[in-house]
Image (cartoon, rainbow, N blue to C red):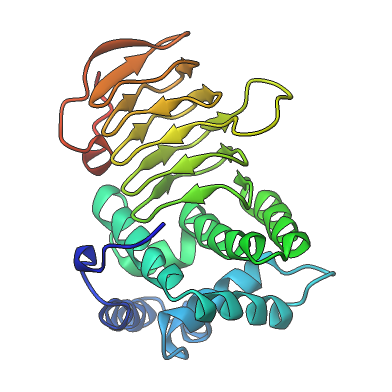
Length: 266
């Protein structure tokens, strides 16, 4: 999905300078973590270097060493520069929408929803470039380590937040557009063993509450809101709120982009 470069609030270089300064401050406040901050952030000259290092460290196993995985992640990021821009927008999305996040540094280091999404971007690049075995391997490691299962073929835009993230499932033909927020336990799945285009299309600005289940090749319209625990099996109109089992329209979504203000009141 193409990026609107004019929408980027800060360049990767500016964001990286901010994160490094935060790491230095945190290192002074907690000296016992000094080596961690050095190896993960301060010793890296770019956010690409740090992100590939962190993902490789977390996802490596007896099959793929951190060194090999890091080469794969950097290869993809170099081949597709928009991947890094999308990562920065995802990070800024979490920073602006989650009141529990005090520093951009903490998104990079600790939030598995952000990390799982960036690993998926690499897996998606592998899938598109006929390296499907590697794409599926990365998917498997992300699912095992982060408990987030995203098929490598799924298309995900930028400015996306997976909040808490545990238990999120995204099917093969799913599309998630820009500026979407999805909470833990959400399934974007099919309705059975049908083939072809069979998964939801989540349009820009949508917020999906915790535990919602959305099934089939249906559309969640632009700037809609899906209440937590809902089961959605039909299209959701743009700018509407749905809730229930099965989900029904209960009113307007209440703002231009529910994903941005994260208001889960119905």
